[in-house]
Each structure stands twice: as C-alpha cells, then as structure tokens.
Image (cartoon, rainbow, N blue to C red; front, side, top):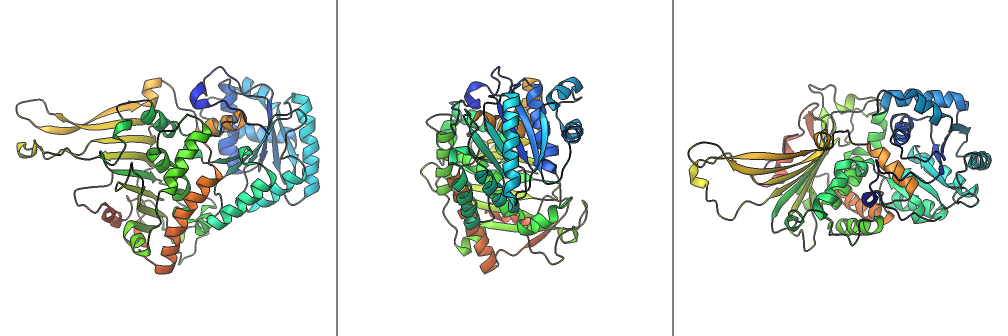
Length: 511
C-alpha cells in the first residue's frame, strides 16, 4: 500500500518524459456522465501526451451489462465529444481502446465484487500491471458505503500479488456536514489507510490554482507582500451562468451553494492564498499549511453571520426562469443559489484582513478568479492633480475563462501634467506557452496513479472546512438571518452583496 514519493510540481508533470507506473484503473460508475465528460477524455489525453505507461489498463464497472466492445464504442464517442485534443487520433484511440474492458457489479452484492476481484486479477496478469490498482468512485454519494464496504470484503483494498499500491479516489461532496463527513471518513479508513484515499476537488487541478503556489513561493517580490501590512482585502469569486440543467435541481435542493461550492472549491482557494511557506513542495507539507489556515478561521456568532454573509436565489430574469421553476426544485424553496461571505484568518500574518468570497448560479458570466487588493500608499501625493481615476494596486489570479495573472498599477498618462490611470500587466498561459493548459482531471488522474497527494484533500482539511460551513448554516437555520434575497437570472447577483465591503469606495471586482 505504499505511496510513491514523486511530486509532479517538482518533476515537471504533464509533458515530462517520466511515464506513469503500470496499474489497472478501475472506474466504478463507468456509464455515468462524469466518466463520459471528464474521466475518459482525461485518460485519452494522458496517452496522447505520452504520460501513461502502455501497462495501464482501464476497467469500467457498472450495474447494467454491456460488452467490452460496446463500452469502448461509448467511450470513443465521449472522447470525440469532450476531449480537448481535437480531432481525436483514431489510430491512437483504437490502440488504447484495446486495454478498456467492462465488468458488471452491484455495490449491494458482495458476490459481484468477488467476481470483480477475479476479473481484476485476470487483467493484472494480461497487462502485467504488477497488482497496482486505482479505484475511481464516479458514483453518487449515497452509493459510497456499499461500494467501499464491498471493496474491503473482496480484498480489493489491498494491492494484487507483488503490487505496490491500491488507491481509492473519492469525488465530492465529502458528506453534507461535519457529522456525515466523519461517518464517511470512518467508513473509508475502516477499509483503506489515509495514504490510500484521494479526495478529489477538480479546482485544485486547474493550472492557475497550482501556479498560485509558484507565484507566491518562487518569486521574492510577491511573498513579502502577502500579509496584513500590505493587503487591504482578498476577493475570491466563482460565478456560473449555468442553472439547474439536467437533474441538478434535486441535488441542489439538498445542497445549496454554501455546501456545493464554498465548502470545497472556495475554502481550498482561500487556504492556498493564505497559507504559510511550506517546508517542502510535497503533499504532506502543503496540506499541513492549508489545514492550519482553515483552523484559524474563527466561528461566527449569529450576529456576525447576519452581517457578514449574504444568501440569494435567482428569480426569473434575462437568462431564463427562476430557481423555483426549475425541474426538481420546490416552488417554495429557500435554498441559496448565491453566497457571499466575509471570513477572517486569525493568525499573525492575516489578522484583520477580510477574505471576501462569493459564488452563484445563473450569473451574467462564467468566471473564477482570486484578487488580492493592496492598501493605498500612506500619503496621497497626487490627490490634488486630478488623478480621480486611480485605484488600489491589485494582483489577480485568473482561473477561468482565461488562465493567467494580472498586476494592476497606476501609470502616468502621456502628455503634460501628472495624470495617472490604472494600467494592467498581464501573463496569459495560452499566449506565453503557446498551448492550451491540460484539463484539471488530467493532472489529478495522473497524480492518483503516481501517488502524489499534493492536490488532493486530507481528512483534517475536510473536517476543518465543514466546521466553518456548519457554523454559518446553523445560524441561517436558527436565526433566519440574513434573509434570503432574490436576484434576476443573468445579473451579477444581489445588490446586497455590496454591503459586505463596509466602504462605499470599495467594490467587488466586476463579474
């Protein structure tokens, strides 16, 4: 059950010459949307980039039968539709597809998992995978207990004969609150050890999120500025134009934006922005520092929740119907589709600096960014020179749609007089490196195969984030404050979010 100590952030990762170790990659829930849209295209692109060993084979597992050939055809269509590498190299896929297989298994039937174990052993021998296995749980959370228990009963929580590892990749949500997260962890750790468990948050696989580590710790001009002496506040935004397409409404009725986005993606981005310098660039060191940040976010009182959070729900607007008219949603639903919150990291580095988070559905644009807004200079030498368009210096990490980093400073307008205007210096991944960034799932699947846990979430991180979310949610439920406010679908969100700035001269970065 060993974990390989290689680290993609150190060793070059996608595009490097080091191929993955041999293994059998087992997708449980292989006929679902996640496999078609993300996992299958990611595996194909890893082969396309020469990052997977030719001794990596794939086994799809689901309840409804199909032949190996049917499964390969379905996956080929999914890759043709969703792969970032277009057009698909038919010869390459045909060769890779020969290593894709299918097996029927039902999580509630232990005998079917014993049959699955025999099939895995047969494929181990055929492809000389050395007994190494990665199990990807591409299933709904309600199916986790049965699958995890059956993997343990069938002995699939251990490597095959002579194997070095057996790992399990778990998709979010990691529970619905602290109590259920602990139950899920107890189940996982009753069958696997912590170093076998890879809790995946696809945001951490995005190139720019990872580049935040390089920006801070590989550039001496930036790291000294990331503290309370220089930073006025930090904004973290994840905005989506999508609503409740497909069967999303039923899921959101049980989740809401606070649990769906803030607990995972947004708190992870906050932790990477605020963490101390790790002792090493490896999974243990980085995750140690992230969890310290989350543990420094103090619980809010009900009055603080009322004044520091905004919860909204989209109503009918230019972009379409309201949330309550969506499929699977109660016509009287009080579930939030928008959250804005101000949190404080109570440690020496960040004391008193507001971290302002916002996320929402059915907004005017799909965008994700982290913005560090710096304090103004102590003396305004230019106040009486007509420099009314000036603004604070800002460092913006753009995650979507264009990955890159921007620095906004004030510069002099050409001509007589001292007229200043904000100017922006840009680094863009596409134009700088001349190629599209790999998809997040490509990074993360390769890391799981290689045993690099840096970009995955540890159990204590999950618990620390749920404490923050449960604290806010309990005040919403008990005190009913702040009230749920409505915003038109297709807008930039509720106007009430501006109140979190506590200053008429400070604004949210435009969505």
